[in-house]
Length: 542
Image: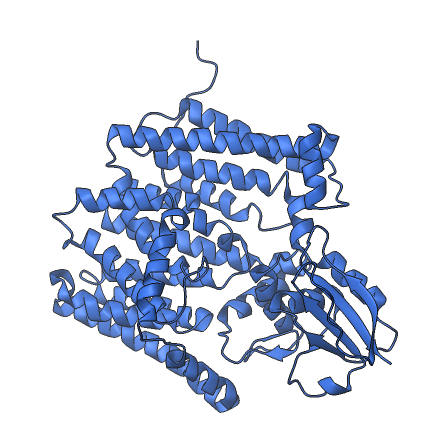
């Protein structure tokens, strides 16, 4: 006798159910929390400056201009904050921009996989994206890099469309890259240029139709980028010069490119998991068809993206994000053709791993609420001293629903080559959902500067005037500005030498305090709970 209802869909599930899964994944952890250190609060701080009426043309952070920072993402984040700020806290409303660009990315990667391979690969592409380790945090932060991912995904779609519909393909690619430039700078432009040079080597893109589509894409992208640069040159010549210098001034065309290439490729096995093993299987399976569009386009896109990145930046988890769309496409091709043993291995690995870690999350939550198991409760108290977990019926209900849905899925989902991909994507949704419901208060406390900013605000003397800053990073300045209205003047800023107060920041942990001089007297010191490295010290000049 069957107790559980049968899994009612095919594997991967049909489109509408994937839309619901993607929406749940994007929304969980997006709202109901403070801006977190470091990128989340930094990029929100730029949008917050726009809400105050500053930096709409040249973005700024806590009163300091950022002349080479593209504004589009911040316009959209500030627009969401203006529209929804009455219903949500400003930072939550601004983070709706992440929801928009995350949805555009998933839609673009699904549409491209569908055109390249078929409907089942479309579902696999969404599941791999949801399960991708390197995407989890950026997709839920105030993060312009996700706009670049959306631009790349739709550029891939457009190039696949060009041989049949050159005008539509060229328009989509030009619009995606042009808006990507306005959101993130020159990287999407160089990717398009490299792709436009490489693709005509393939027969499908050597036709008159495809070449006209590529020309339309280049022309439209140039029109959007050139139009913005013309406005900037007229209104803000210094910002125009900084933006122009960033095009080629950041390039390093030397032997260090090989080192950076190795670092990018070396981080992909964990950063792009589970795409990497699936894409290697796709490459082996289609090794005699690498010249065909389904394999050639994502490979060329990966090569163009890697070439654009290694000339400009060293490898880290943020700069490597643009490499993920072509890898996800290749992985989607391989997901449905896994041998039975490999498919079962991925399925069992996902089931065991995510069930184990989900159990740890529940156990940790119980320990923080009840003090038992005592060892886990003591560890949580050391991580965030003074934090007290309170029972939230809504968080408990959401966590319970996710956990029951997970148990139902792994017990009833039918056998399929795609089952391992489904299990991994659903497992990542489960783990992220539990962390951002049950553990959200703890994570929010450890990642937010709210309490520290309020403590500093109370310590400021009445009528204090300007405050000089020393050592403060962008995340700290953005947090102090938003939570306490405190703006500091960094080195070289006009009027800094006349300030009677100095806020110094260090991240050296237990290193001895370095006094700024005999004329300065410390009047306050603070740090975030649980942070053993950061120190904020406020001095007054006597």
